[in-house]
Image 1 (cartoon, rainbow, N blue to C red):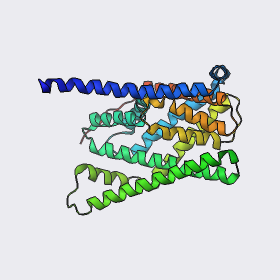
Image 2 (tube, helix red, strand yellow):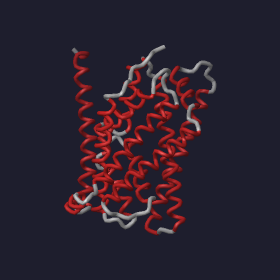
Image 3 (cartoon, rainbow, N blue to C red):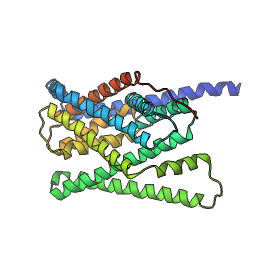
Image 4 (spheres, rainbow, N blue to C red):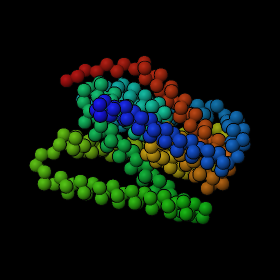
Length: 313
């Protein structure tokens, strides 16, 4: 009897966690709407120029295409054509919008690779390695942009910029500390488990071209948000949407449904520091959300037409 009750408890727990994460996102969004004049924000959205929104959507789709190219260059699974990486990347982009951040999308991709090749450890290791490269570049760009703005002499950004720099440096120290501990604990082992062998192989595939491609992806995301601001007739220097996009990207690490509320808060908070009205910043954030949904939806439809036939060893 006890064993028969166990399976029923897990789904309930999973649903509860899902509801809590969804509630956290909605709460963040409600607080955001309490902070700004949402009526003005919705009115401003109606003035957006469609052409610039379309360009922003194309840039977002290009980012996901480059994400597929990054994994293709890292060769996560033998004999898989680029079309497979591209289809899974576009589909995972759509899944992320309705899942819990980057983890939902990556979980979908690993499952897809497993179905295509029958391998799990290798694609998972390379996907994690690509994320390490990607988020490392995001953190590096956050550090560089913040330092540049501070040196430029913007007093309104000094406190926020200092906090960003400290957070990035702390994250680097923690990451290096964890890697050092893992290296020391495995030093005396004569035989490593399969997942560690795959992880070591994946790290070796992070070449200079992978770093360069990751930085280009960071710049394109910033360029997409810049197009959103231009669509609303907001004139700002490129470092403003770039920094807002970087902070919003880092928020993808939080297990909130689709980054709901958190991403919008990042966009609105950063732009408000640089004299952009919070209502307009929220308008741009919501438009960015809609543009990403449009881009990933188109990517999902396009992926269905790709030839993903594979040849196994």
